[in-house]
Amino acid sequence: MPMFKKWVLSNDAPVLTSKGHHDLSEKDFELLEEHTSDVCKGEILCRALFLSVDPITRLYLSYGIGPGETVPGRQVARVVESRNKKFPKGKLIYGSMGWQTYSVVHPDAVQDICGKPVQLIEDLPKQLDGTTQYHQASTVPNAVQLPKSACLGVLGTTGLTAHIALTKIAKAQPGETLVISSAAGQIGHLVGQIGKILGLHVIGYTGDGEKASWIKLELGFDWAFNYKTQDPDQTLKIAAPKGVDIFVDSVGGKMHQTVLGHMNFCGRVIQLGNLSMYNNPKQIPESIPSNDLEIALKALTIVGFNLYRYSEHFESTLDELSEWCRSGKLQAHEHDIEGFESMPKALIEQLQGKYQGKIIIQA
Image 1 (cartoon, rainbow, N blue to C red):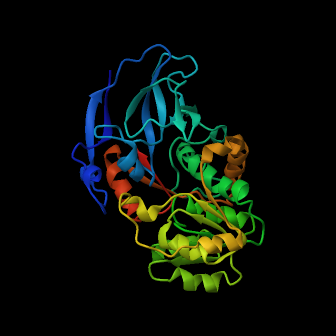
Image 2 (image 1 turned 120 degrees about the vertical axis):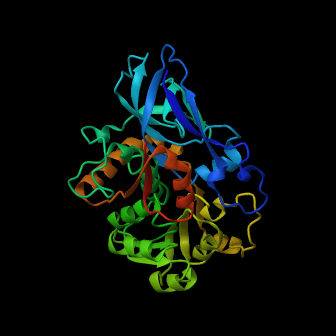
């Protein structure tokens, strides 16, 4: 059987023992090399081609996995050995095989995600039929086929989240004002563009001046601000003088509280994450003012997001997303990094705000 590499949580990982603030470091990870197990009846052996790097992995390292366990994550892989007729050698699949170069899996295996059974691996979306295996550009321009890695980004949970958050949860209407935190991130840069397609007035916040210029000049946001140098409270008075109708938030903390103060009556808040606490999840947050009365008086709706509650909309959503990409309406930005060994560094730099769009590791 072939040798394979996998990244695991180190036995000496400071992330496990640190009290209070701890920036993730490469010392939290250990690279192991092992033989794959035998392929039993019904199983397949697959080799990773592309792997996804996601901020949520930071929380798994604190709460989800123990020392020596494989770091969780999604990948696109090719079947290299099969004892399952439905998954012949050479077939491409994607799923939650983790940070490892080879995986032996049973295609019928499921995982529990928020109480809902979800297939561990799946066929690539039909919307990718006839597309190229490898990237032709970091940003998919008009008339360029989507890469297979798109099922980890715009045609995966990332794009589904962005589209469904606006259309099914917020029920966005033309003319409404949308604010996005982490607006240059893997989900945020899609949310803003989808907002413009739907006819919204779009305001994006990011922690970097160059990223703010990117989402404004290249992606077409109406307003873009660097929240580190431009006060969100003051900029919202300029960019959203009539208030905010929809807030898609991945940051939490003070940003969340500030935007809530500008929400309109019956405003909708979709909470995708809490990046402000990802690097110190066990630390008691700094005290911030409560918006309880404002939530009540304005009849705000604040929704925590669980994508798989909306699985009946996946196919129609993927159809629309792929069409927007191919027509040039939606730019799905992918930042490609070579080498499986680069994964911990890529995650750390993502959390530090170094990259924009979706990060893909080419194994």
